[in-house]
Structure formats: C-alpha cells, structure tokens
Image 1: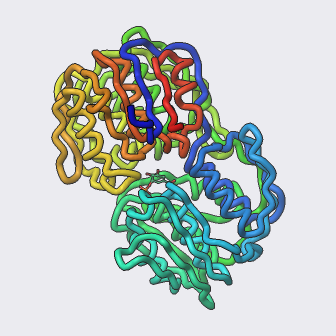
Image 2: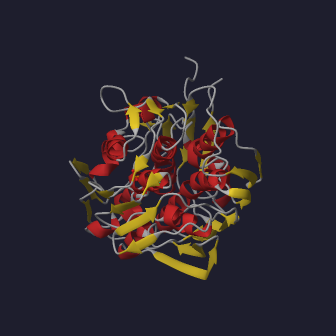
Image 3: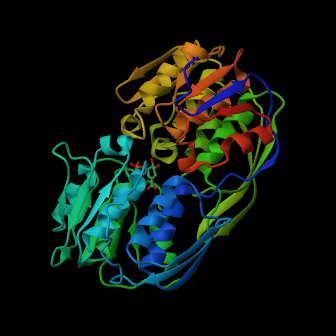
Length: 445
Ligand code: S3P
C-alpha cells in the first residue's frame, strides 16, 4: 500500500447533530483586530481571537514589523500599538500562507509605509487575482510590483505621499474596500469607496471602535487620512462562516437539535441564515446582544425538510463564503436550487463552483455549473471513497462541506487534501464529532 501523502477525513454516514457548541472566532474580524490594534496608540486586549493559520499569518507579519504581541493564549491577545507611523521594515518577506484577506488588506496598509515589503503566499494564494487591489492603490500613488499575471508576490515600495481617491468597486469585495480604507489612513485628503452591493463592514465598525471617523451614506463609505487610532478592548464573536457547516448539518440530519453559541450575526454576514430559512430551515436567533461593536446571538437549529429555491442575488455577497455548505443543503432539498451572480466563487481558495460540482457529481447529485453559479437537483447522496474519494483541492470550506454531507449520505465519504481546514477552523473534526458527526482523520506520516 502506498504511504498516505495528504490529510484526509473519513466520514461514517448518518447521525444527527445535538447539544451545544461554540465554533472558533471570526476570521475576518481576527485579521482586522491585529492590524488596527498594531496601528493604534496604546495596548489593545483581544478575546475570542481565531488561532487558525490565516489569522496567525497576519499576527506573525506584524511581529516581523516590530509590534509586540502577547499570546494567543486561549484566544486572548495583548497588542502594544505602535501608532500609524510606528511599524518597522521587516527583515524577511511576509508570508500570508493561504490568506487572501491578509494579503489584500496588508497591501493597502503597507502602501503607506516608509519601507519596502514583499508579500508572498502558498500556491492557491499565488494564483488569486491581486490587480483588484494594486490598480486602485496605483491610483492613490502606490508603487507595487506583481508577477506579470497580476498575482503575488507583491513588492510594495515607499512613496512620498498617497492621495485619497473616489473609487467605484468593480465587484462586491470587502477585501478591496478594506484595503483602500487602510491605505486611506495614510492618504492626503478623503478616500471614498462606492460598493455595488453591501459587503461585510467589519473594517468600518472596528475603525469606529478605535475612535477613527468613518462616514457612510448608502453604498458610499469615506474616511480622511491623518487621524489616529486609540487602543480599546475587542471581543470577537464566533465565526458565522464556521457555524454555517453546523447550520446546514443540523438542518439536513433528521433528529438534530443544536445550539451554536455567541455567533456573529452582522447583517452583512447573515446570507446563509436568510437562504436556509427560505429553503425551509428551522433556525432561531436567541439572546441577541452586542459584543465589540458586532451583533451576536446564540443560534438554535433543528432538522427540517428543505426545498430548492432560486437564491436571491442580493444575498450573494452576504453569504459569499457559505456557498459550499449551502450547496450541500441544496443537494438534500426537494427540487432544484439555482444560484446566479456568484462568479466571485471561481476565484476563492479554489474554484468553488467547479470543485463543488465535481464532488456532488461523485456523490450522485446532478449539479450543473454555469459561468456565475450552479443548478443543483436535490437527490440522494451516495458515497465516495478509495479511488473515488472527494478532492477538497486544499480548500478548507470544500473539505468541511463534504464532511457534513456525510450526515445524509448512504455510504462512507472520504475527503482528500483537508490540511487547510486549519486555516479557519482548528479542531473542526473534534468539535463536529462531539456534536454527532462520524468523522475520523488520517494525517500524513
Ligand atoms: C473577506 C472578504 C471576502 C471573503 C473572505 C473574507 C474579508 O472576500 O470571501 O473570506 O475578510 O474581507 P472578497 O472581499 O474577495 O469577497
């Protein structure tokens, strides 16, 4: 037998999700907590930080630029802010690993520094488009070198002064918006970004929490350079993107009744709840409250009969990371689910439309990709193992989606190339097993 060369999940079919779980901290907010706390004046205390590889890459980058950070220790961090002008030139390239958020947001932040820095990433990140940030940053006066195809490595050189711009985003992207806002902190005058549709607004909320003035009118968000950030306390909610696997899992597995604790329910992130409810899911939001400027609730989800729907296009940016899980719900629903307006899914950690369509087809589900979406016919999930194992293509959310599919599969599911689950959800197999999923891990020797 040949030696195992990748990290695999082996899923035993059936089961139900029950009890109460707290999924790890929000990835988007964890990245931003390091960035803004580092640029603030004073010491920021963070709790609920995601100790996954992506956010840890951001943390390491700021340490490399001279920021003293204590932790993480069970999600707690102490960050000694150095002020907007206090970062130091790193001695090595900054490795962003698998994280598009880290690379794109840092590109904006570094464009305003007085030193040169180079950002690199893994194979997946090195294939992802970066011109969406380097082009508007160039309009602000930034000097950034990319590969000839507009991808990483990015080398960002100092310039005398960035200038504010008004920029209409060509796609709904919180990463591009946030990148330009971070560059805007260093720009002369006002930087305004106009979004085609609302996207996650964690940067705006957190800048406000650090005392920086951000002005929003409808889809237009503006800030002026030259202000200051003041340290504060941040409490990071559990990540709705990680909770999504459990929302879908408990919905599709008969006999489930699960409580997800302290999940972020920012209105720009709740597309998955809206879409699953439209499909017939039984989801209740309990004890709504606010933590660190972000709305939070406990979420109770029980199994339900799902039906296929036409997914409203206005929900797409609000559920952009949850579609792999939603596709599993669609595969278990009665009738057809149709997604359009989601071409961005093709440039995530993998081409999530194609990779999900391939995996669903292996499980016997009819799934027809289109340029900007997919059509999925609900049916019976079969099995996939050995030579026929599902390939996650190193994409954390693909791996976890097919893992929860096992709750409704008629046979075992084996998933290859799952190591990157660590990027967003350390401890996923253990937590999912505790809730009732039959999951075993095989790590390479
Ligand atoms: C993120 C924005 C989204 C999302 C990503 C995190 C962020 O990307 O897919 O996982 O933290 O700003 P886009 O801005 O490319 O849509």
